[in-house]
Image (cartoon, rainbow, N blue to C red; front, side, top):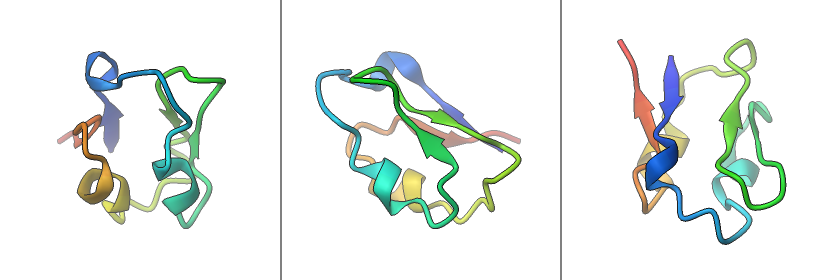
Length: 60
């Protein structure tokens, strides 16, 4: 499972990670922190590897 660390997200731009997700599992409303649809997520870790703010984390 991938979790969002909301306090790390600057919430001042459109998240570029949304478009990187190969399964469209990441959504964003306005400039809010992104959310993950866990039922679509394939745990490819693209979001974890590419977010400069370390918003995405793997949860055991």
